[in-house]
Every structure is written in C-alpha cells, then in structure tokens.
Amino acid sequence: MFCLNVILTLKDAADATEIEGLLAEACRLSRAEPGCLRFDVYHAEADPATFVLVEHWASEQAWQDHREAKAFKEIYEPQVLPRVERVPHRVKLLVE
Image (cartoon, rainbow, N blue to C red; front, side, top):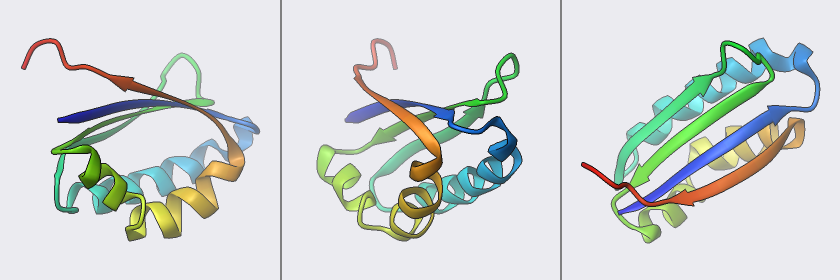
C-alpha cells in the first residue's frame, strides 16, 4: 500500500470556497480510479486556509497512474496547485 498525506495552505484565504469545491470534485473522481483505496479531503475548522488530503493507494504505481488521470491533470494540477503551498508526507499506516 502507498499512503500519502498532503497539507495544502492557501496563498490567498479568499480562495477557500472555490478551492473547497475543486478539491471535492477531485476527491470524487479520484475515489473512482483503479487502485484508490481511500481518498479524503479535509478542511481545517480552526484555519480555513488549510486543507489536508489523505490518500491510500493499492501501490505506488496506482498513485503514479492517478497523476495522469482527470482529477489530477484537469483539476488539481492546473487549478489548485498554483494557489496553494503544498507539503506532502509519505506515511506508513501503523494499524489497519
């Protein structure tokens, strides 16, 4: 299993509502991709400029394939990434 947590911080907090909608759509599409075991998007209640992505993929290859799919190529990469600071964390699931 390949697990990734990504912290996104908006460059402009005024973008929160639009980014929330874009991430929700990217999440919906990502969940339908082959090899996606879990894909969740969280919006921090205490800091509206912060989002957290929690991704579990069947393999690193499934995650690589995701980076070529619609959710990544048409939503995340062109519309979200330019408007956020991104800190990815490859993580290990301790307990299933």
